[in-house]
Length: 230
Image (cartoon, rainbow, N blue to C red; front, top):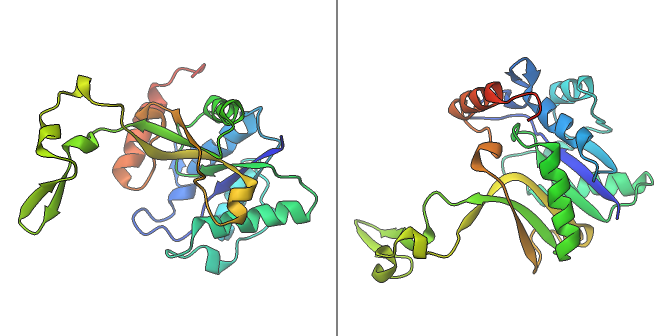
């Protein structure tokens, strides 16, 4: 199976300007995703899709293949991620690369490793899933969540669920955004999640998504604490 990686990194971040190339322990943020992709045995090829010339330059300096600049209309706040992915996959196929599955990598997940990519692709092959989503354990169980209706609260499930101890609750996980493995056919239909979705469980500390300065600072602490073999 031909599995390609696509690193998504658009410019114009509002909360943390320039975050995709912001230095993180001496390396541009995007460099960590490039390094993880290059070390993944499961990927036959990886490209960076960005609309920003500065991001493209930094990515290339980190050894990434940046064969085009993404059209501006595919990089707005309202742009649909599947459109940007389809644009990248169409480019690959039009230039002779066979694509059977895509690993989606966001540039804002610097603690994701090559091992995570390889294990997620292996899960994709083993289960025959349409999609593999990287997940982490939910910090708050959905059985304990309320629906706020004005000043009043209604349980999403029932008040009886509110009294259940955690060890009696079914496992609850959430997408962490570190990676997805998706069949090419799904992207053709504008979807990421197919009917059969497998979850690749990651530690939350390996799946930090950089959105605010506090996330960046947390990533610095975690990366500094890693040993070389990590």
